[in-house]
Image 1 (cartoon, helix red, strand yellow):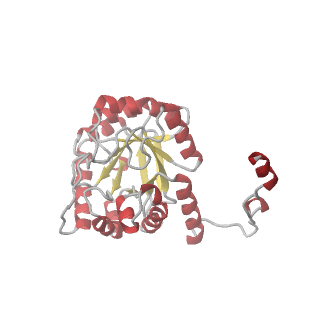
Image 2 (spheres, rainbow, N blue to C red):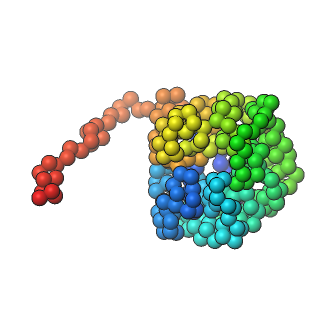
Image 3 (cartoon, rainbow, N blue to C red):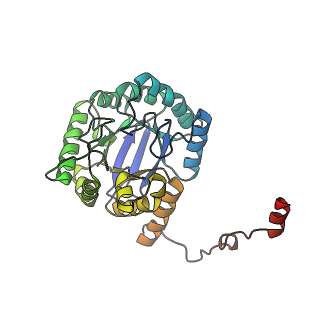
Length: 309
């Protein structure tokens, strides 16, 4: 079980550690590496958010710019246009806790005004103005390890000790955020799998995850469909679910507090069974599986024949 932590995110005060929270990914982009603009309209994205919540998502992470490095950066104006109305409706109509995936302070400010209460910054706080926005608004702030600039890929990053670099970097970013008015209870830490790391460096980082508990803040893991999983398995993004769940299992055992994922239902199912097997959740002695769930419904061959006639 993860160490107990308290997270303050706008009006929310979340007690973390009893079970991992699941953050569902909601892309408002045409060029995501994983869904390639599958949800192209506002209504489609709102419906997707509803599906993620129904599947068990605790947080909806809205992104208006893909992290893929083979596309140019999106202007601040366009990114705001992509996310603001979506956040208003997801937070307002669906009542969800919403995070905004951005490294731009004006986007974060607009998103918070629309109802977001977490800023998921994948730049490693390159712009301290993001911390100013969170300090002034009370929104939570994700601090992620990376040595690369946003939208830039480092093909052969070099570290003497990548796990030590992650810890030292995040410790320094905590101090920077605090100096800009962000309270400790507003901070979340992300070791940055795949960001400025080779697959082997990402694996080394994840194997050393427990050492980050010394920093005293909850840990967010964005492992879903990542390159290191693809490299291990030799599979494309949508074929990486089993590998993603394996990574979630190992890092949950190491004390991760939040998982950012595409496949929410599969992740919540995995974590539910894990919790029972680990003894974190109980199972009633009288529990039995209903007959309706014991087997798949049989096909009606007569109906199939009629449809083919």
